[in-house]
Length: 318
Image (tube, rainbow, N blue to C red):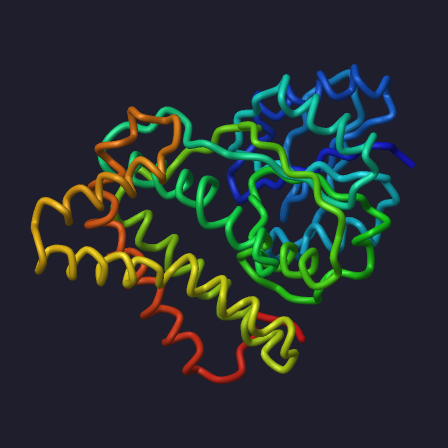
């Protein structure tokens, strides 16, 4: 049994990255060998030589199914899940894991920023991250209806989740995990720090297809828990908060536009400040975000309706 297991996930043609290796080296120092890395993948990959233990866990399916299956076959005390494309803020991650274990909480997470955004699309994705971290996610959790966990980096206590997670197969492991956390009142440790950076979608069609996948993931969760009232409504509220709130924003802006155009502009600028917080260099993109990004939410909505209209689907397990 290891005290900490760092879990990462590789897709086809991906390899174990140097960025994850750097995180693992420091965590191995912190836990004096009571640590290992598990690479969840669908086919064997080359494992580099290292001064810490690396295991390969072969499993097909989504990241969420891989994590569930891993915990059924592994008895580590804590699991630090990090996506393979993440560059970590190593000092923040080390401090985060130590404090999480000291407080003996069930799950912990922090913030994830976009890595070196350039161009319109990647900066809009950066604003979308800020909107989630600064406004939507903390608001929903404070109201008791939050189900979103940053899926790129999170840490969980194995004994709390092993054999207990909702048995779904979904692209959105962050929602499936967060839904369980909410319904079961798991003890949380949330840090207001950046734990890492992810590479954003830099292309319009990449973001378009990502939203379609997210819609299928959301739909699979909604279908899987639709018969459970306490679960169903929290999933619906999440969808409204993340994918329909722009409609309310446009309605307010429209009313102000009819009344007095400068007030409408001031309102949109004010909201831009709320979204970006201290990241003022993102302010122009936050303003543009309110006009451009709703298009991707429309794509999400259309994809969701198409998925739900198909009836029963093998995309989820009940």
